[in-house]
Every structure is written in C-alpha cells, then in structure tokens.
Image 1 (tube, rainbow, N blue to C red):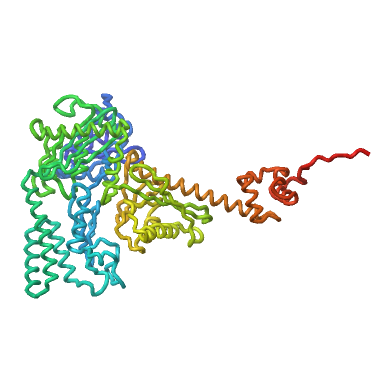
Image 2 (image 1 turned 180 degrees about the horizontal axis):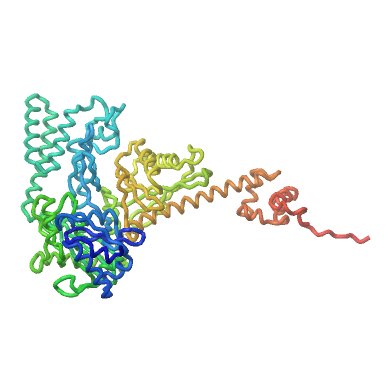
Length: 629
C-alpha cells in the first residue's frame, strides 16, 4: 500500500502521526484532532509546492499513527515521541542551561543531600528547580551548616575507621564512624531538612523550639544553644519568604528574534513578581517545515512559522516537568494553546494560564524579552566577543563555581608508551595565560604507562607545597582527560586534606566537562560557547606545554644514548660536542673535518663511522702532498 492509499484509511479520531523515510527512520512527529484530515493536508500543501512541507513529503514514504482519547493525550504523546526519537523535521530543544534541584537520598541508611540537574525515580526526594542556578548550591551549603547532612561520596552503608574533614569542621554528624551519632539524631536532622526544603517553616520552627526547651530543662545547654541558633536561622528565612510571597505569582515570559534563518529565544523567569533569571536558546538551522507561513498569527505575515515553533518549544519545556509557573506569556498565538494550557493545568494540579498579551504591563514584559532576544542574537550570530568579565560569569554559572573564577590551573600528562613521562601545569589568571607561573614536572614514582598514577603524583606534589606554604588555592583545577584522570586528581587532593576544591576535567573527543561530584551529569556546552572556547584554550595550552617539555626530555634521552653508545665517547666528550654543534642532528650531519676540530681524529672517525655506517671509508681530511724526488 502506497502512502496516499494508507492516508485514506487513517481514522478520524485524535492521535499522533509519524512520518518515516525509506530507511524506516521517523523524520516527523505531529498530533491532530482528526488524523485523516491533518495528514491529508500535507499532500495538498506539497502538491501546491508549499516549501513548508515539500521537503518532508519528498522524503516520506510511510506514515504510522497512534490513536488516543483526546487532544491533551495527543499533546503529551507527541512530546514524548519527539524527545525519544528526535525527528529531524521537528523542533529539537538544544539548551546549554538546565536548572538544578536539591536531592535528599531518602532511600539510604543515612540520607545525603546533593545538587542535581537530572530527576530519577530512585526513591529520593527532589526539590526545585531553583533560580538562579547557584541558589541550589547555597541551600545545600545551608543544610550542611545547619542540619549537618553531608554530600560526600563515602559509603554510609558501613562504618569506617575515621571521619573525614567535614566532620571536624562541623558540617557533618559523622555517620561514617560508629558512635559519633545515632540513627535517631540523624533522622531528626533529615526531618528538619525536609521541612525546610518543603517550605514548612512554621512547623520546623515549632519543632525546634520544643526540642530547645526540652534540652534546656534537662540541662543540656550546648544542645539547647545549637537549637537556638538553628531557630534563629529558620526565622530569618521565614521572614524572607513572607516578603517574596506578598508579591505577584510566578510567570515565564518569552521573546524571540529571527533573522537570516537563525533564531534567538529569550525566556525570563519571574518569581514573586521579580525577574530572577534569563534563559537563552539558539537555532542556527530550523526545519523547513517552519518556513514562511502568512497565517502564523492574526497580526499578519511572520518571518517564519512562529506559532508552530512556540507550540513545539513549550511542549518540550513544560510537559512532564515537576514545576510549571502559574502564568506563561508568549509573543504569538498557536492552534493548540488552549489544549496545552489544559494539559499543564491537569498535571500541575492548579490553573496554568498560557496567554498572548496584547497590551499593558504583560505585553511590555513580552516586548522586553524580545528586545533581549535581539541583543542575544547580535552577540551570538554577529560574532561580538563578550567581555572577559561576562565569560568569567558564564563559566561560574556553567560549572556552578562558588565564586567568580580568577585563577585556573590546568594539568596534562605526556609520554610515548610510558617513556619520559612528564606533566605540565599552565595558569590562566584574570583573562590571560600567566606564563611566569607555568610549571613542568618529571614523573618520579611511576613506571610504565599509568596516566592516573602520574596525575596523582603531580597533583599531590603541587598542592602539598601550596598547603605547606599557605598559599591560596585556584578558583578551579582543570584536568586534561576523562573521568579516570579526574578521580585520580581528586583522590590526591583528598589525601592531603583538600575536600572542597572545585575540580573538573575536559575530555578531548566529546568536549564534555566533568565536574567532580557531578560525574553523572557532564556539562555539555554549545560548540560556539565562549565558555567552551576558554576551557579549550587553557586545555590546549597545557597540552602544548606538556608536549614541548616531553620532546625536550626525549631529545636529551636520545642525545645521551646515541653519543654514549659510540666507543671512546664519554660524558665530557658528549658535552663538548653538544655545546659546539648545538644538537644531535648537527653532530650526525657533521663531516669528519668538522668533528676533528672538536675531538681527536680517532674519536672523530669513530663518531663519523657510527652515524654513516654505509660508507666504507671516511673522506680524507688533509690533501696528500707528493714530495718531488
């Protein structure tokens, strides 16, 4: 059955249709109230040479469908299939930024608290997302300080011989060592953290106050003082929440700018009536199905099918998300806007408004987002180099660093099959490479090919000296390599008592950035990102410096072994030859006369014969003078 015949047999109910090419790959997924009518419309548009569907229908050879009960189910199913199959004629959401959640590992014997950007069904409790991104890290830091729940990688399913540094700086109760805490005290801290993360400030305050009074009555004054300080912290946070809740509802505001086939989207996150963060999206190549469509909005012709674009974008952004704001404002209307709003309302359990403001303050916000999208477009596609400060801020956000990065130290290992293994350290500081702080290392304790052990040795030597001399640590330690090198460097730091240092690695092929402690969620930066370019520049400089030093060491090794292998050449003769000729290659290319000027003739002949074994006899140095009879 050919494609046209199959389309005639499609049902008329709501559902999802999937176009396939000759290789049976899904190239487009769409949803419809009436499957037969919607899919037949593609044939009509293609017959009228509509550029919007021409390429799609020229490639499509088959269509499948899935029937559902209503349009809302079709929306959800379409979104899932697009995310799973990634059809090339659909809009695919490519975004450098995801917002973090705070995770409590409630399924563990002693739960921990982490910052994560990925939600899993693993028995843990997730709270968020948090805007801006570093807010989640500040909250986890507060939980460490106030409730003493750790984020470490120590296995808490068994006891260990001694506690780590976090226990001694009072950021952990020490559940890793038997006797330092009790399961009851730890569960109490976890319950407090849960109430704090769930926003139950009043319940938490009452619970802490009750415990404070009980401790005071039983004359446990240190414990009562601890509860008093915690109660004061909770009271301060509760006051801030009252101030925020007195303002307007949460809203997300969209704006866009399209030019020369490239698109920039800006999304403003408004929380409590205030803009707390901005998110950027970019597309350099849009599917042809989004080419010019004069019926995209009631306002008239649009540069591209903006309504279809925002319909696809919003589905991928909000369907299946744990949190959806009460209001979503977009610049253009689209056909299934009301159906999408109803689906989001149903899934979030409260009314979600999906609106296209036409006037007033809300329209001004949409226009503001559009103005910022134009600025984002200019910075991205007009190749305007952002300021160094902007790149530093972007790097801080991308890698969730606790402070603006001022100094980065990068390490690389270089060798050939384990021979002459060396390491390099290069330094980036305040926007430029600081060559005066570069360091070279000879690997002393590792034999053979072992990059991980070599990295451990170098990092240990570097930062043990930093600790002994009480010098400041860098903002970031960058490792050239993958997870193995990253873990080796982190282990070296932990062995010398450094546990809070930000450390990351960048893999060469995939250009993925792994953050220690978040290895399951590597940072994927867009190839044009100035942040990625900065990290690559530092990594490449480290690699260049290591290779240069390795070659120098190899030349010295070759020089020693080659010349010392010549009979009659010792260390002093080798030194004299190298000082005179400058390199081993020059010695190899030197003639017998030139060699005789530096060493005795017999030694010169042996050196010449060693490097020119194919010549039977060396050329004469002095002409033969025939004395007359």
